[in-house]
Amino acid sequence: MPSLRSVATLAVCAGGIYASYLTQGVMQEALAIKRFGPDGERFTGLKALNGIQSVACFLWAALLLVTVARPVKGARLPPVTAYWKAGVTNSIGPALGIEALKNISYPAQVLAKSCKMIPVMVMGTLIGGTFYSALEYACALAIAAGISLFARQSSSKVTAKLAAPNASLGYGLCLVNLVFDGYTNAAQDEIFKRYSDTSALWTMCWMNFWCGAYNLAFLFGVTSSGWQLAAFCRRYPEAAWDVALFCLCGAVGQLFIFATIRRFGSLANTLV
Image 1 (spheres, helix red, strand yellow):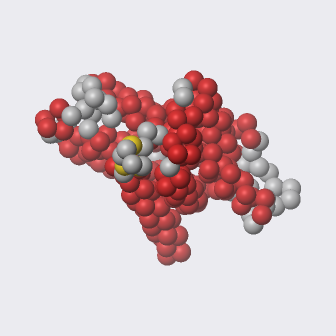
Image 2 (cartoon, helix red, strand yellow):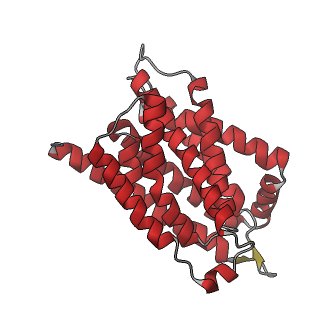
């Protein structure tokens, strides 16, 4: 039986995650529906937000590591390069989830991704050698089966408004997204096991370092999304403020996420 202290800690982490990301959702919605300037321009940098957030989270975590949470001298910490593979999957996975929204509705995507426990458990077994009980697998399958029944139902009015309605492609992209998420979580669990001195803040810092590097290369090198976002924020400082608040919510939320993974593992974090 878990101790009362463990239950209270998990409750605090869950509350922090919900508070941070519900607030972030409000900020993202505001950016999506606001009109800026006398001509009523719409914000065009929604796809670049996750990349900019990765950079902000890295800088925030690095600042905390340098100032108030310095690693203990002699602590056995993973090298920076230990996170590059998880950084790849953590960068590509969400991008595929966003791409899926062109083909399926947002509620359908959320419901499909709620099956994330299964790939996390499978990848945890394949990569980290973590074995779960039959009851845990049964619960995960029952939740996934129930969610799938809801996910199959889609309003024709909503589907008609999609950019390119294609349920098979949309759910396929979600599936790949889930596999990548499963690998990311399993890789983080394995790092925590291998390097027992690893802190949540250390993992947050270097995961976001790689995610930020990949995203910046894509946003400013492969596409022009990053330049467009920067130009828009220069024209409308109000939008820059909203982006900054969006990133702050993500940075605070990630502190709770990595604390949950460090203390309770990826499966508990996924369930939250």
